[in-house]
Figure 1 (cartoon, rainbow, N blue to C red):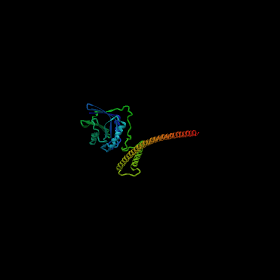
Figure 2 (tube, rainbow, N blue to C red; figure 1 turned 180 degrees about the vertical axis):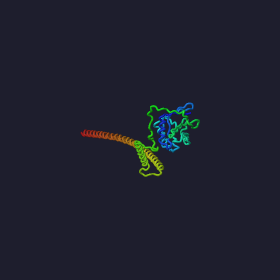
Figure 3 (cartoon, rainbow, N blue to C red; figure 1 turned 60 degrees about the horizontal axis):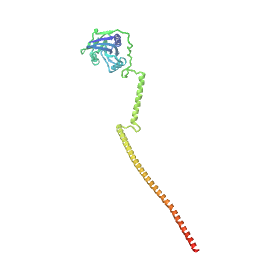
Figure 4 (tube, rainbow, N blue to C red; figure 1 turned 90 degrees about the vertical axis):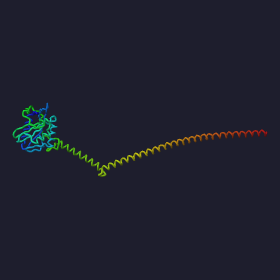
Length: 305
């Protein structure tokens, strides 16, 4: 069982909208809250959203993809805390009931146990609610429907009839100046990005059709160059090592030669000192010989006397 409480302001707004065009069916959705106890539902309808971009005729209405996009955007922007309780549509001049097409919409889009349908005949000023009962769609008795008198209306009642949704895919949408600027900026960024990508692909050497092959070849070449560079580095290091060992060896040999030269120089000095002694000995011998000769001469003189 479903009981419905609807604000008088919402009901009056729906009826005024239904009179705006009686040549075709009009529709929208109902928003509010519900409570459930022991399988019974109490609904309170607080707001409505008019369905835009529908496909409608005198006796049927279809909510298109753009219709649902518009409804969801309005709900998210203005009524994020309200639930979608059901939908409403008009039967201009042909009574209160749910057609086969209406039942299709109810079964596919409003199939919760508390979901309702509100039908208005603006020509005959008649209306009625329908809901689920044991898996079937039935009309809700008037005794279970209550119209809540208007209180001091909250500022929440928003005139969104001229609301422009964020998505430009909705028919009739006219973006504002800031959104135009944003689109131009995004377009410029896209062009710059494409230009950078084209430059990377073309480069100075022209466009390569088989880019993946070129990338692999460049990668292989870079790897080979790296390996060759490492090999040259190893060879240079090895050569430097040999040169360092040779320098150490030559330095060692040089030290040995220097030691040998120092030794020879020392020996020469010693020999030179020996040679300097010999003349003294010879001089002494000569002095002795001269003394002997003088002695002999003196002896001869004495003998002569």
